[in-house]
Length: 374
Image 1: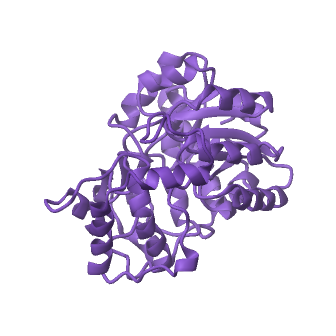
Image 2: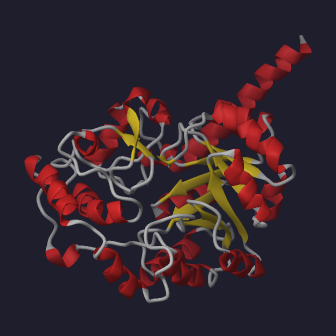
Image 3: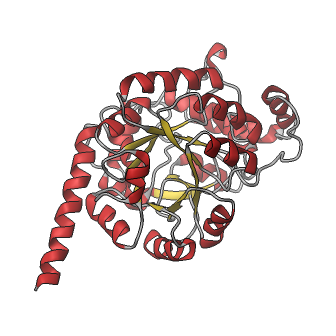
């Protein structure tokens, strides 16, 4: 199961696990894979706390960090300012009717409001302005061996800064065109995600997309993503030429996940038919569980989702209230997850999931070996 990228990163298995929860990240790295922390919601000081904790809990193991710098977003070109100034400018671009509509959806479902002191800044770090101080923090932690950009090719100055620090930098793609753009920019790897994947995704299925991208980028390592929930799917990805498996949804239902029980039960109860690609939370097509919130933004009375990052500036209140009041927000919560949710029907420890993936991979390879021997 060992591939070249394992040697470059110093990991045992080419299993990459994206999670917003540091406990999951540490557990995957300690189990022989590479945990990757989603950093978009953390300001630099908060991110420093998270990474310091990870440094203390992964021993001599490496881990990665995922940032978000979209290749296209509303507000590009007005970024010669501080994050606070940029948020103030972006706030002016959000129509009040969208805020009123979002507030009504939550009120109609009886979701309590957030205490004023617990509300976060709305822009998060969906821009180069927000990501720059994050990268500065990340590169102060030598156990970080990989940085991935979730939406598009990162700006050239970020690529140079990260590679000069001896850290691998890559980005997600949902098409051959995107993958070739990443290669031309000099990235160290690409994460190729099919439409089955949770979160932001394109329209092409993994089993079609993976080999196309692998063939197109040549010797550039490709990590296969989208629809990987067991070791058979890992084996399929590696059989096509992928350098590893990039997983995300799978870690939403592990014991260590920072997911409220009511929300976790929603994932466990869902089938693969229950997901939809929607712009209703982030402004870009994002796969999540369909519910009353996603339906409302598609309804006749909806003002329509705004472009990224403006839509999340509207929806962040719903995300926060959903996390704090998951029982009340059950029908309007933000539940990003891939179609693999249909396989996520029990709670396991993270280390057990990593071990299961490896064992199922070995079983799949043994089955093929028996077939070939016959």
